[in-house]
Image (cartoon, rainbow, N blue to C red):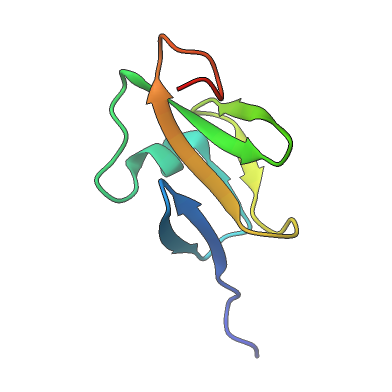
Length: 81
């Protein structure tokens, strides 16, 4: 039986591996040093402003490329930090 696939993604340019195809916004927020509640979590989307990721949003890590997440002050607009 093959070993479980690992899915790679980045949070603030720090690389992470995840053993499940899906990750929630809450799980992203809790990794590494963590993202405080006063900040929003966004996923970079090439050619577009970042997409806001809610706590219950499920992100498919199997999509082509490496997903990149970042935190931004909750009072600012996506892509305008």
